[in-house]
Length: 449
Image (tube, rainbow, N blue to C red; front, top):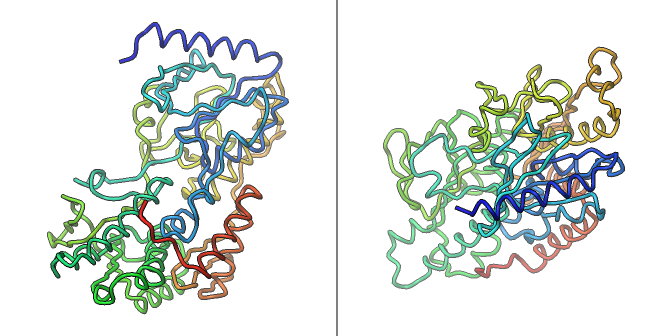
């Protein structure tokens, strides 16, 4: 444990920063730089706030294209944006770490830096925004956290890609038995939501379009891809016709879909035990079966309210945390009590944009905001659904946008166009199509690094 002297010195130094920089500006502390937090960071008015961003990673991750990075279709750097580059201002500060305590009475947050050599420190706030997202939901199943590969961060995508190539390398070894080879080349994805379906599709493309061209032909017939889903349906939020189309495409591409199949445990990295006690042997297990609250939300239940049903921070229609003055929450870690919304990137991004607009409008004396509901000066948050899209492999996608329900090549073009326009910087808007072109003409890099 770090010495008290070192820790307190760090705390006092940061309090001094806050006090010196305050002036007429309020101290705005933002916890998290995901879809909600990053949009807030981009749109906040630095003329009104000294902004302090705390995030365990120093970049924003464009999660819809994470599966493409895992397969090597895109380079890892093409789907991330450094948060320090958003603003170049003396009143914009970024700290790499995680929150360990929130003290609403003193209006402070305690931050634990990522590097163990650095002592925890405190930041004072006038307004606090909690946008820390969610974590991978293991549902308390034995072995999932230890033995399955999650798909939520950029290092997860890197690990998945590396292990798939490693499985092919081991399978091509002349000393590898047929039984072991079939095990190594069986890849299991748990969860048939958009993330699981897209990941299975992208990995299928990696194998059939690139790995098969560069590994012995005799191992190709041993490759299997299985997607496990506990519910009766896949892509539950999509129209039934698109679910059926996805099933048809997966069947053609030899991707096995097993619905109404629950996982009981994952005792080791190469074994999945199902609810009926049957066993699947495989080269790796990828877990994309949903999200759950971050550990810090559970730990801070006595400091901030947590909805028992949703396991999230309850907020009102203005994204204010109930019973806590000057504290807001948004994104996957929060739930609007009057109308719970699905935890998606577009919900989080719209909330970030909305809250930035609200915070930029709030009167310095706070009366406008405190009485917003009564005097109708500010409008409550309203979510506008923009549709759903998912890549399903082999240059095909499904799109569910209002009355438009399409699948196939045209939908794939729409999918790519939509995400290209959503990228937040011109740098990545150039890198992503360059990566697509490079993959199309030269194939994916199959180096293991």
